[in-house]
Image (cartoon, rainbow, N blue to C red; front, side, top):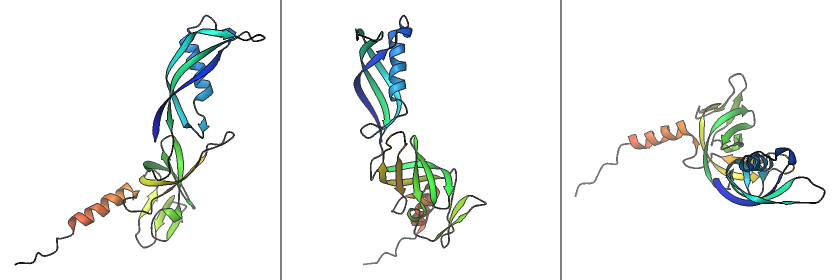
Length: 193
């Protein structure tokens, strides 16, 4: 789920940036501190969207910089267990597929793809269902449910697990085919009174 979060912090304005517009320097400092991080409370921080720097700063003895309060907004992506997401398959491996959801890749393990025996064709880079003959390859669009979330610590990007083995989940092309099959089924004959 994408969120827009408003926060308040104190930033350091280095002496070499004195004379430059305060809002620009403040934005650069907030971007440097927050953009691209993964945090348990915030999730994946994508961008700083708005910033307001207090023009009054403090000087701390021994440091030539000024410290200013700043209010800002962050655009974040916070994956929630049981959330339905759609994404593109970006990589296929013998153990599953990586699906790009938002700014991160989630693992769709072969055991969570479909109710069928699945083989991996390394030459074509596809996962193939034995009975159903359904194929999954890079570039396919998938609808899935988030089943596991582990946000990264100490510089790692975290891990997300997803499943497509539930009704109305899977490759979008398969879902369209299944829907067309149910729409084309003839209605049961009606009894006459």
